[in-house]
Length: 171
Image (cartoon, helix red, strand yellow):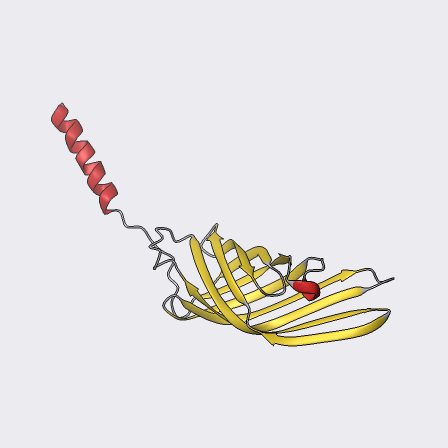
């Protein structure tokens, strides 16, 4: 009887030990789209308030590397006094750390990168003023997939919003 129990335990241990764990593959042709909201910001021009809307698209161009674009809009204030709005559009690149960190799941994606963006800010009320600049934003983020194609993302960065949260789609 002890031999049967030992044999069963040995087979279970061998099966568990040889089970392969999948990593999310980021290769040429992988596509992600993020749609979300953003809060927080840096400085007078982006830290005044309001919740921003943002979208980003990332396209796999090499193992663990994506490039794409980002766009965002934010408006806040009172029409009677001052109305603030900001707009951000640009390109970005990301490195995906799943393979480097040896993540044993195909549901998570950790990434970081930088870009080149144009930021525009305007406000009106007792006069009207516009401001625009080109800058290099950085970002670090993660995605978690509930299914093969749908998940959630969170991203910290130096763009229109410090924190971005929302849905992500994988194609």
